[in-house]
Image (tube, rainbow, N blue to C red; front, side, top):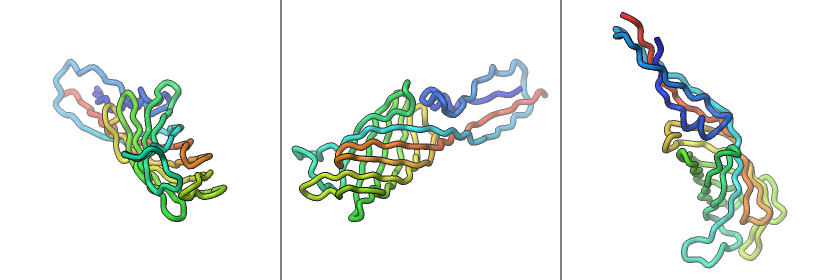
Amino acid sequence: MKRIVLTGAALAALFTAGIPAASMAAAPAHHSKKKTATTKTVTSHVSCKLSLTTVAPPGSAGVEAGATSGANYGDSRCSSEHPGVARQMFAVDPAGNMTGRLAQWFSTGSLYGTFSLTETSSSAPPTATTFGKAAFSGTVTLTGASGMMKGITGKGTMSCTTPDSLHYTCKEKLTLSETVSTTTAKKG
């Protein structure tokens, strides 16, 4: 008889098309002599949309044009039923490329990691006095999770557009992974 340990409930609750969660089986009514444990990695493909706005740095009255670092906050929607909040802490290099840390919080837990975006188009780069329109594409790596999503990692692509260097619309296409443990008990 199999006994499967539940480890993916949070992801199944968060993403309606997410990783299939294992269900718990009733404990065997007999005594087992031998138990074997196995693990397998379960993956799922998920798309998320982030609507972010650059916020003024602490102690500042507003966002300055041409800022080379900062924070974006906003909505994260990986399914219509489970909206969340996202934050990007970013730095922009002289070529206009953006790198940083990303966190997404949902009612069941959080996902966090890093991103690296290359500027793919720009009408006019932001300067110290003007904001600019641009598009970016690159990668995102989810390095960890908390709450009911603990144990989930992932990799994927991210693309972002901004009409004004203040408001960003980003799309993530992620492959999420989770290690699921199972224990098999045999009658003695």
